Length: 180
Image (cartoon, rainbow, N blue to C red; front, side):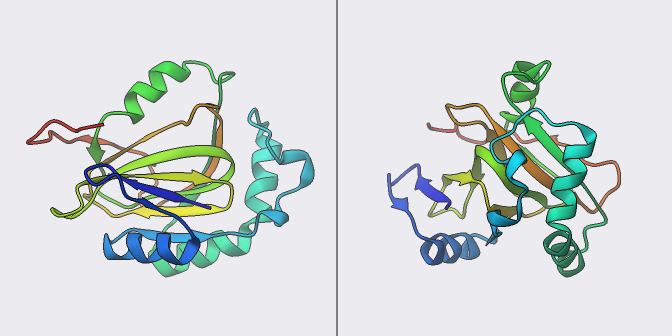
């Protein structure tokens, strides 16, 4: 289950209802998918063949198509990151810069962990959303954010897109330095 850490107040928000309510107030979609649908041989597997990626997409076909229909997503794929990923450090540097998109950034975590750092409203400021398997998040178009891995440096996620070219980041220059 996702955990939120508000950076400027040190507040920690836990529990599906509280996390959902907080994110909804910030304009961020949050859902939770049933991880028991994931084939057992893919649980905690972070190096995936194309066939295994297809298995994940098939296992969550109904959820993906429902979300796509509700939000206008046209294409989806699987991203798997771990220490076995070629050029992982280079990829993380790209992800870890605050940026925006011209569409929502959607991730449904099927294995491992990741953190979205999202700019909230003026009162809230930046907050971390620690995600685990089953968590689904959609950061709204134009909302400054970045993504990084947790200490275990492993994540598998379904990504959904409106634009067929997929993930395109636009750098965001913060007026004040992002505090950690």
